[in-house]
Length: 148
Ligand code: FES
Image (cartoon, rainbow, N blue to C red; front, side):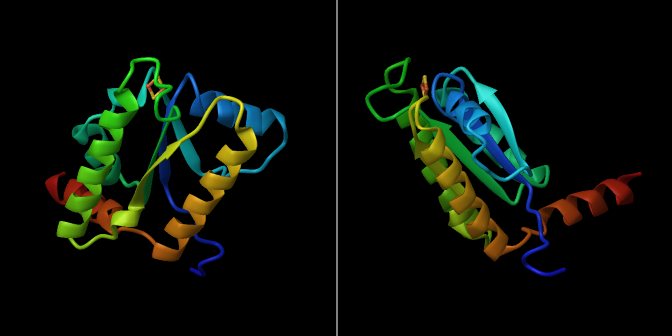
């Protein structure tokens, strides 16, 4: 499989007040962002916890993006700051198990920044494509087959 044909599994946890709306704006403006990026809308990125982020990797994500409101603009005051702490914690955990910490990233964006969302999403996808698969998906599938 060549790097150019490799379509990674990317999960993007997007705050519905900002990044989700920005992704929608990017789409309606016909700006391209990776079709293989699975977007999950949340009321706030503060809703993510370590379990959600780790579970995404366990379920086969090669990269996890957390996209929240601009700092100081979270509708729940500090939800995006908590999310940033959790993303940093997951990056540390990935490093400890031998995976690149760059596989998880937090971005901050407003609802009107459709072009910026597309740019950052494409940049993240290129980085994950360069890193390749985590290998966790295959391992998880093997475990399931062995358990069956
Ligand atoms: Fe958007 Fe908190 S409401 S990150």
